[in-house]
Amino acid sequence: MLAIKNNLMATSAARQLGINYDSLARSVERLSSGLRINSAKDDAAGLAVRELMRADIAVLSQGSRNAQDGISLLQTMEGAMQTIDDALVRMKQLAQQAVTGTYSSAQRVIMNSEFAEMAEEIERIATTTRFNDTTYMDNTDTVTIQVGDSDNIITIDGVDMTQAGLGIETGTGLLSAATNQTGYATTTEDVLTVAANPLVIDIDFTDADGTDQETIQVTFAVGNYSLQDIADAINLVSNNPTQQYDENGRFLGYSAASIVEAGGDNYKLEIIARDTNIDGMTITEAGAGNATITGIFGTVATAAYDFMTDVDPDTFQEWDEATSAWVVDTDGFANVGVNILTTDAANTAMDAITAAIITKDTARAAFGYKMNRLEYTVAVTNIQTENMMAAESRISDVDVATEMAAMTRYQVLAQAGVSMLAQANLMPQMALQLLR
Image 1 (tube, rainbow, N blue to C red):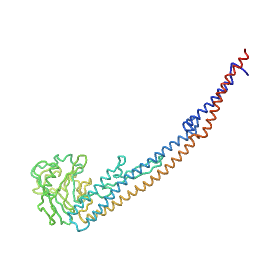
Image 2: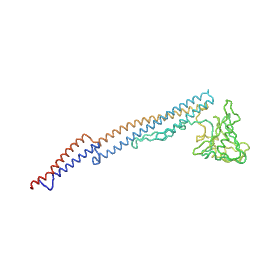
Image 3: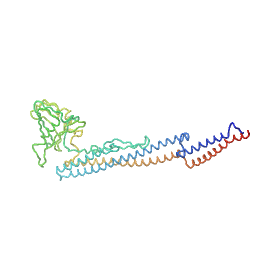
Image 4: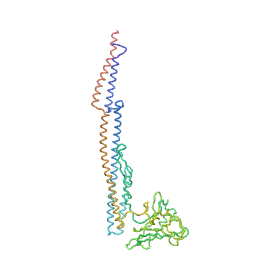
């Protein structure tokens, strides 16, 4: 029907043109983005699956990087353990050398100095080797490597390669004891008061068979004394023994007292024997026995006072009342430990170093197979990531060939729609011809 009020052909042509133009716009969007799904309206179910896959891909990719970081951590620690290995081998070599009876005591002292330096270097390596500003060789903490979701983890056990962890804490092997672990705030504050009569004490070192004995007798006049004053008074005597040299020409003077820091600006007085075979020590009041004192040696106002059995536990707490023997300083300030100063000590040191090497090798081997495992983890994670990306691509990516053919079809339809809409807009003019 020819009409001038409603141009139905133009309306129909415009509607078809709009449909084709929308389809053409969708094809252009897909081809320009490379994605078949650009919004939920394109494929709601496919979009949901794709986003889950993208999350899984991101997790897998990060898991691969985490595993590679774990490998880097292990490589750093394992490389440091190579140097520890070299130091332990040198320590065992020195111990083997010191066992031989052809060396003198003075020569073993030189060997022991290098032995102790190697142990200190092991301690330094263990406490300063870091990865991402964190140490992993001075503790046994567990490091967790996340290589996937919450259930996909690989744990790396930390190792203790310090002297304590390896059982090679070094020292001179000399008997010693220190005052209580809380210590004193400074080395100059008064810690001993002698009132009414001088205090004379005997520091007696003995061994079990009684063949070696050493006595240091120190006199404290009436007055106040700090830790440093006490150490100086003891050392003044121990550095000037009655017999200056033994039969081997060894100088017998030494500093028997020292001040050690207990941490937190607290200090302790340590008293140490000169010989390695000393295994007992007592501190008793000598002389008239009528000195009145308070402080580091307890409170004394009576005669015949035995400091080592009657003293307050807050002074020399290393004395064990139950066994009547000195207890090794648990804070590590006593000069005991592995050494090669004698043939017996060197034999013991060899056993300790052998055990330390086994401990180190076990830890190093653990690092090795953890690295192998993480390398396999990286490989399989990368394969999983690749397969997930392929699956996500099949769901999300546009098929360029198919979409290009569709875009060409929509272009033709859109062009035809424009042409037909132009023709339809001319139809009302035919009705005007009839009205003339």
